[in-house]
Length: 563
Image (cartoon, rainbow, N blue to C red):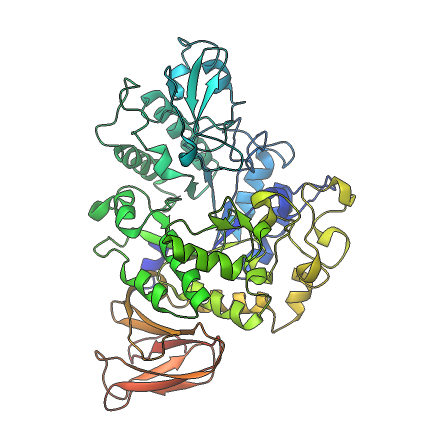
């Protein structure tokens, strides 16, 4: 494999880091995080191995849904700064070798957006067709609500015009009619604007809802010949506008089983989403962790679609800014995960997920945490982390809903966790307290502790970046007689790695065979001084600690990398 190839499709072995601007660092003392605060932490992020920032919405918004209810898609919320601050952030990040992607919300706007304000004035307003309306009563749609604790359906009656408008999320987030060519033109223009300011792509929100034509059939004069044509249009526009400045990406939120995700990549043509979050593997991973049995995760890896072009990539994650959803699992499997990691009702969200971060779910066990992040970096694909994961931040269950995991970043043990100099009562979000509070968990302390989660993540990121076969390679699950241990191999051209992870708390010895390699082939552990080689039967036996992990590189004479 030529190392130069890894720069062309940079996202295939990137380390992506998601930031909520509001809660990362307040540089003005207002109590709210801002863009300049993030700029001040670019060197910190580059130091720990981050190569791509994902900025959550920073646009003007009533913030009924953490900023995903946008009232001006071209703007910067004045609480976070202005366009000048945004450009400075992009400039500094690029100087440090860090790319930046931003949220692209194409499914809905805020009900305070000028388009919707105009649309609800009359049924013949020019902006009426920017949204989805119906004149007949839709009946009970409570089973389709994404926020069942707050909404009793996905249609709301607009008293002024006497018609119902569609909203898959909150009623303050009316769905855009993406079948309307004018709406598609507006979204393309929006993408062009932010690309011109230097972004390296977009995290595309709620993709299946945005191209769902079932709600429009018979209600709208605009219908796609095929709904996925819209994603092809966006990908084509992205490639045209980003030409000359490197590959720009669309990372899609598509919470579907693997076989259904293939269409969102564009199948064998790879002409739609560049990347997709792998929700199915994520949920099978937590089922495996709940059972201390690698089988559910192995099943997920085996079900990954084959035949996709190298331009298509999965993004792996442990936690994100939303609840840990388990909706792709069977009902009894959902109960297993929820009971294991959210035994109390206030730890759960909407009956389908967990509003917790990993340290709380694992009762603070550092061995299990470090093993889980080793697994994240070695699953085939690109790792994505949520801010604070690198230091082991916990959740704050005292705040409502999904905001439990969106608390201020804990920079120090000082006032407001070093997030802001404002009075605690003025903070946009309350700081976490208890065993995962800033007096116990903070970045400043972690930097000085060589055994900290921060140093662990930094080391994993470094080894991951030196091992592009992890992000580029094909995966093979290797059989072993130890059920709690996952053994898998990733191979790209003539480079391979073998990864072992013990999901159990007890030490064990793991025998496994590599039938395609020659006897005597060395396996070099990239994380320790311990290595081994295959015996005459192409077998080896690897000792594993409880929650242990191994990164074994298959040594080749023509591999010029340092071991």
